[in-house]
Image (cartoon, rainbow, N blue to C red):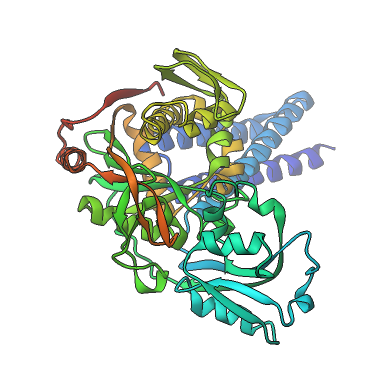
Length: 499
């Protein structure tokens, strides 16, 4: 028995040493902990292991050896769990940090649900409506892949196309899936997707260049575009080809710890800028939200052109992002200047004054615009309030309460083209420096009107940019970059880190 216990003590000590050292090796390899945190943790763990080994050598009584065995086992299990947790964190960050240069596009043939057309073979000899000059090359490829002849009728307006389709003047339509969003914006077609079904589809991918403008995110200012993608599935798999309904440019100076949130209205009437491969009409005027149909890089380039700035990174979020993240953080506190009995038809009440929102109501507050005289401009301000409240929670101990759950959901919350090491560097700097961040907010303004929207092929509501607010925004961004206080902000807040 004594010999057995002696052997057990030797193996327990060896395994404990190996597991602790491997755990420390993994943490140090990730590089997320600053030296002032990592070194004390390493010293404490090494001292504990040393004490256990010494006691194993000197222990004589059976009860002492049993206690040491239990302590050793606990350390081994904790180390294994720690390594698993570190790997899980790295894996989660890698999933959201993507430089994937492929953009998925889908062309589909749709028929009315009540029609006799139920599958591909039913399309033979049918009349199919298409939009002229709207991705016609790939529409033609889709129809060619049917393998038999169909009659094609061209339309210059998506509204005329759908009117004939619903009136059964044509049998089907063949369009890029992104145009379903356009159709449901038309009065009387809000539930268009409920009346149709997909008969055939053609999926293809566009190869794009990786256009990250890298910055040293711990020592120099940088900008990030946050694009709220209007996807029907809340999945990033179909994010390319969805409208960009939320457009926030976040300028960060990590040295002065100043952040500017700039909101740009979704209906801003802008000149579209993109690479030829993106498929947009370069130089054509349209709503900013429509640039999302050609990928976030098109939205990014268009905003860069509008403001005359360089955006370093982008982040894609969807409706699911906000509600899930707010719930994982235990809710957020937001101040409202107006009472709303039923925000965004969600059943959520917004009181005048401070509100504690769960995920559902935070999303409703961020989406509401019809209840405000300023409409989309006020919605943009509300969205910045919500983002500010989330940042407050993210730099507070509340983040640690549900860190594991957040990591589990990370790839469902957002996607970014920022490299994983950049993300770790930001976290490491916050853990090392602590302190507060000053967060400023500014909104671009404009005048509502009606003008030709290229992607729609017809006139639609747009917002003509107010050049004064654009100039003010440019000055604010430059001030942040220079380490100065921005002069034209709407509001300013400060987040305190109590770690």
